Length: 78
Length: 199
Image (tube, rainbow over all chains, first blue to last red; front, side, top):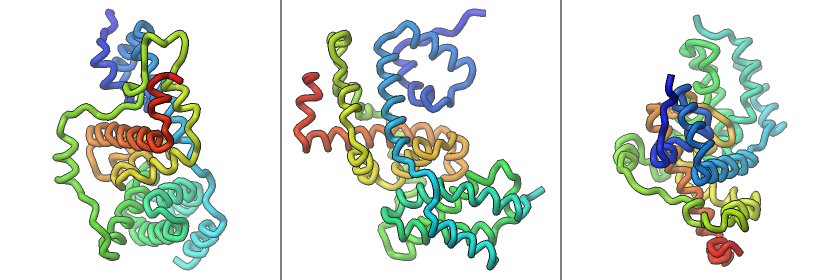
């Protein structure tokens, strides 16, 4: 079965969905095929992925102790 | 079907961090964020019998959080979020969105320097915080849910009551707006020219 090929215009439209892991199987394979051969789109993808990671690093993981206690009290009283 | 109280309580305590994270980004301060999450929990407890299955809990809680925030804004007389129709018509326009990469990438320099990568390397936490805070709410919440809390498009669609296609386009616009905010901040520090020249 021939893998579907996409051009740069189509790849750029899907780059964010690619880094978000939201492409279906066929779209993913076509995208991976394109990124293997296109330095420009690959560079763009890496940039968007790195920026997303940097934004993701702003996440503050655990809830504050005050909030945890407040919610536990709420759960007891309801 | 439905969901047991025991399951709800156990999962809720694990979800508190992400809920507080989104609440902080919506309200802009810790005290209001705590109140928002507490109100969300109360509403969830009252509506628990409407939750259809365990798998839907996360997106259901984010939806209640978002709706509670909107109600609070309206009650406080704050400028109401432009919802559905206005947002959808703005977002249906095809347009070229701002891209940091396109602003800085210079293919002929590929082997010698990488200005867009250097720009990212110089970004401080506070630069990103400031750019994120500058986004309008409907962009901020979707970036936070996707990039910080790692929600899927389906979860975001469920939480914000929008189609998955709208999640995709709104997220693209939100990220573009974030990049534009970062670029404008760089201009304030005189870094735009340096970034563009690859210095």
